[in-house]
Amino acid sequence: MSDHLTSSTAPTASTRDRIVHAALVLISEHGLAGVTMSGVADAAGIARQTLYNHYPDVDSIVAAAISQHAAESVEMLDAAMRVVEGPLDQLEHLIRHVAATTAHAPHALDVRHWLSPQARESVAEFDAALDALIARILGDGRAEGVFRADLVGDVDTVLIRHMLEGLSSLIAAAPDRSAEITTAGTRTIVAALR
Image (cartoon, rainbow, N blue to C red; front, top):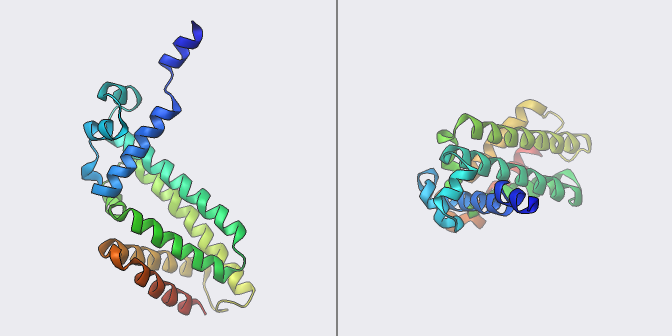
């Protein structure tokens, strides 16, 4: 009997996962405007009351979805960087990763301005992790003589991140040209560092 009480009163990971996944799908397809309580419930295949048992409002769902997505993105990048050798190859892989992420979710770029403070914090954590990765790649590349010796770590890190954001904006505006834009973006970013 206690197992029944535990399972019926504690939120299940699978229900939370379905809710977060549904929110991410809605954000990627329709932007934040496409995330409503009824829309998330329908997309997750659950009753609205079940949704309210887990999250009190849309902001909390979006914050959870953004947080999970950011954490997963950092984990994927960290795993990829462990198997990609050399700073130049790591930089190129990072550029392709950012481009592919944007091509699969072009509306995700529009959400930053409309996020709650809680969700913005998750995005800020991802940005900090991305900055740390870029800084490490630039430092390694400079130390190995692959990149310019006159790079300024903190300044060039921000410039590269903004170049990646520009690349993402171009891909979001023209997802059918993502391969062409990625190639041009990679060429431009690498040329700036060599």
